[in-house]
Length: 594
Image (cartoon, rainbow, N blue to C red; front, side):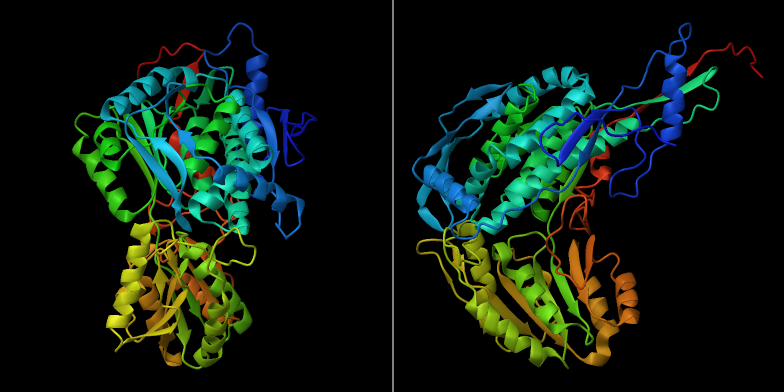
């Protein structure tokens, strides 16, 4: 029924295979189907006509089969651990200088800042040059000059560029990315591998695959000898501003590369706390043949970027991950400049959350305990999806409490270079101050807050915060409603006959809607809670932790104040970076005016 989909051209490894084909039945692993039969008819009819060749003929697209990147375990004595340790030694032994890159040209300035190692903040990892207002405007000019040319580049070339980047990231530069993420962002080897190796490569591969599938769609042409309809995929008019966070190297790679893949020029502001890993990502994209000037690498202050890039009349879109306050400021800046904008800029944002685990009396307690520990304390709670509030029924709390406290007390806090470290420092002093203020709030409000384990912080050498569990009798406490972004878990114990009321608290007591999980074996409860909490989380888990979304398996994003829910890791995400044009061409006279 469908044409053969895969030929034998191998792009990199068995994980990524591309071949020439004009048809595809569906997205792999996705309930996302295109009109393949109509595409076949259209292409066949177009190629069979010589006297009435359409003005626009959809491009022939190469086909790609992709799978999620396998991960290494980094056991002591393993080859991968040795290779990563060698790259860490290299980066610890030098201070990397990072320039701006505008129009393919590396630029230095008189304003130089430093990136520190968060678990050893006396050590300078990198020095980076900071953009001036003039350079920000220059980046926009270069982007606009490049945008039309890049958007007209063969889509197959753009897809091949990103697949090549995936090959480089998962192979040649894998341990450079991991080393920079361990040292600059404080991740353990395992957490870095999940992020800067696997997820990063997954974003590259699956986005390439999704764009291929998007290009395959063509509208119906019931009588193609008389009328042909065609869909042309265009980039946006203007440029895209990408603003990336510190906590995931993969997110930075996705925010900057996805719009470029779709045919847009990008001005990228990397996080000052992730400069080294982001610089390596940028170099990978260049080596993968993204044309000079397609992505400008622009470390800058928030003020410089906002006043010159976000306020530009040529802004086409913003791709952002960060805080609610920053995204609101971006939105206000865009709104204030709408009268001068040449289009209505698209705003895509992911802003974090106050993520939850809700436990039913029928839950498997071993699963609850293990997955709550992981969700709350892996990467020191610095994931947008980290579990920050836990709801437990009174009847099973004693059984859960003792084990949670025991395991949490045993977790090693320290350097991620040591194989038995479970969590390391938070990213910087501002984050340490914020976490410490929440610990102090619990101590100062001991009437309704009890610290069960942890509760201490120390910034003498690194910005360390102990993994902490706090029990509260106030379900609307600041610790239950405000995003902390650290290793602090607050527990509310509810009466067993108050399940419905407590589910309402889960749903209504915070302004966020990013991730959440429910645990239980009672099917009636699972059905009811899933329906009741359908707006409380964009990524919802049943009997699993609320962290760990995998590209193409659990596309990520939330609504409410957690963002625009455009689902990174899914085909829908790429639609934000294209502006389709429908072309109707008529080949017969139309004399009837009635």
